[in-house]
Amino acid sequence: MSAAANQRDARSTKTVERELAEAKRGYSLRNPASFERWQAAACAMPGGNTRTVLFFEPFPICMVRGEGCLLFDADGHRYVDLLGEYTAGIYGHSNPVIRRAIAAALDNGISLSAHNHLELGLARLICDRFTSIELVRFTNSGTEANLMAIATAIAATGRRRVLVFQGSYHGGVLAFGTGPSRTTVPHDFIVAPYNDTDGVRELIRRDGAALAAILVEPMLGAGGCVPGEPAFLEMLAEEARAAGAMLVFDEIQTSRLSPGGRQELLGISPDLTTLGKYFGGGLSFGAFGGRANLMSLYDPRRPDHLAHAGTFNNNVLSMAAGYAGLSQLLSPDALQSLNRRGDALRTALNEQFAESACGLSVSGLGSLMNFHAINGIPSERDVLLLLFFDLLERGFYCSPRGLIALSLAVGDPELAEFRSVIGDILRARRSAYTFDH
Ligand SMILES: Cc1ncc(COP(=O)(O)O)c(C=O)c1O
Image (cartoon, rainbow, N blue to C red):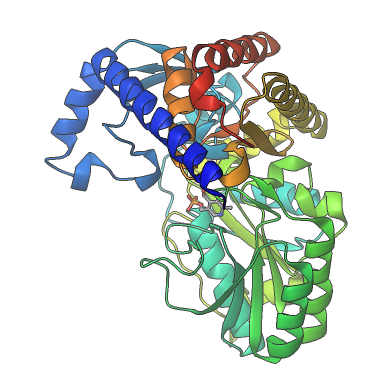
C-alpha cells in the first residue's frame, strides 16, 4: 500500500474512532436504566451477559417489551425492530396467531412426559416443504441440530473428518473464523475458504476418502450475509457424492429464502439439512432431517439404532407455535413477498450508498442482509458500530455488526422511514462514512 493510502486509512480510522466515542457517550446519557440493569446483572452473570452476541460497549441495551414490529427499552425508547431476533423472529412480536397457539398448548399442560399430539403436525409440514427431508427430528436449538447432523454423518460413514468453511457459524460450539474457536467442539475439522470453488474441489478430491461430512451454510449468516455462489454449492454436492461424504446444508437462517429453503432455489438436494430459529414460532427450536435411510438410523425399533435424547425436543410450546406459524402465517406467498421486500430494500440502500459516494454497502439475499464498509478498511467493525448507534438514536434496531432480518411485521412505511433515516445519517456524518474506496 502506498504512503498516501496509508495516511488516508489512518485519517479515516481516527475520524471513525472520534465519532464512535461521541456516539457512545450519547448512548450512555440516553440509557441510564439499561446501564443500571446491566450493572446489576453483572453480579449474577459474567459481564452481566448470557448470550455473547448481545453484548456491546459501553453496555448492552435492555429491552423490556415487543409489540408487532416495535421494541421498547428500559429507558422508554421505541425502536422499529429490524433485527428480528437474529432471524428467529420472523412473525414479529406477539403475533395473535402464535399467542393463541401457545395459550391453547398451555391449557393442555406444559410437560406431557410422552409422545404428544403436536409434534406430528410440525414434522409433516417440514417434510412437505423440503423435498430433501424425508424424515426429521427435533432439538432445542440450531447448535444441537448441527451437532446431531455431524454425529449422524460420522455414524453413517464410519469416518471422522468434517469439512467446514472460514467465517461460518453453526452454533455456540461450532463457530469458525479462520479456524475453530476455543469453544468449538473438538471434532476433526478442516476449515477451508468459503466460495473457493477450485481450491475446495481439489481439497475434497485429495482428502475426500476421510470425509464424513461437508457442513455448509448456503449463505454465511453471522459471517456477514455472504451468499454461497451457486457453482460453489453445486460443486460441494457433486464432490460429496463422489467422495461418499454427507452434504449437510445448515439452513437455520437461509430456510426462509423460499418455502423449501435456498436448496430449493438452487436445485440441490443435501443428504441432511438443519433448521432452527423461526421454525419454532419464536420459541427454542432446532431440527435435523434428510434422507430416510440416514434418519432411520434413529428408528428406536431397530436393535442397532442410534440414540438421540433431549427432554425438551418435542416441547409442546415450540411444536404448537411452530405449527401455527408455518400453517397460518408463513404461506409460500407470504414468504416470497417478504423476500421480495428485502431484495427491494437492499437494492434501494445500495443505490442510496452509491449516490452519496459513501463507503458503505449491504450484502445478502431476500429478507436477510448485512451492512459492510467497502474496501475492507481497517476500522470496519467500528464503522458498523457507529452506524448501529446512529440508527439506535433515530429509533431503528439492527445488530451491532450490521445484520438486518426483516420480519412479516415490518411494513412499507417503516422501511421508507428507515431509508430516509439512513439518508439523514449519511449527511450528518459525511466524514465518518466516506472513506477512500
Ligand atoms: C447458520 C446458523 N447455524 C446455527 C445457529 C445456531 O442456532 P442456535 O442459536 O439456535 O443454537 C445459528 C444461530 O445464529 C445460525 O445462524
